Image (cartoon, rainbow, N blue to C red; front, side, top):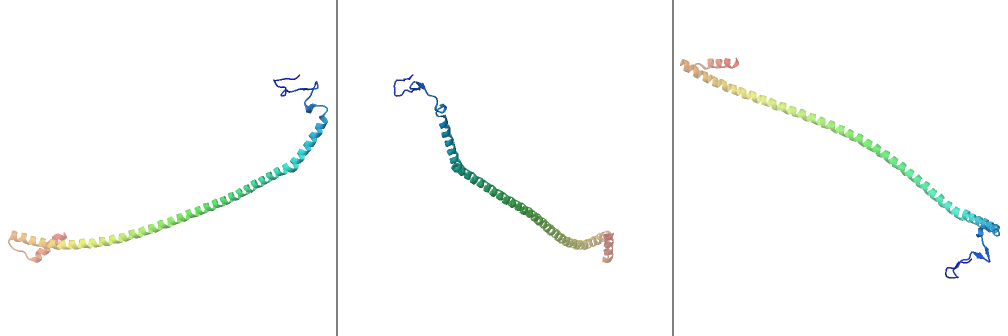
Length: 183
């Protein structure tokens, strides 16, 4: 039975000499030779893979594992170095903080001492100025009192002369003015 689709050259035959052909791997006549061919092909493929391909793949895997191990070792070394650097940095930072606190305390003490010294100097200057002012006040009061005595004596003489018509003597006026200013 031949199928024709318009051209005999392109027709496909499923029969040869009037009998049907089975799929070649399932033919009983060639089964043993196919098994031998399969075994030879398997052994050849196994040898090629085990002697050529697997060693190359194995060496690539070993090389890759070695690189990974080397990278991990390098990463660990760098991590250890960074941890050491971090610890050194923290130690330096702590030392710098303690130095800063010591410098701050020392500066505070110096400023307090300078402030205390300046305060004492100001107190001494104020004490001197106060003493000078008290002396000036005392001198002014003495001068004013002597002027008051003179004025009081002159006024007393004028009052007594006007009331009595007689001018009193200077000693009695002076004694009277001194007695009135003291008491």
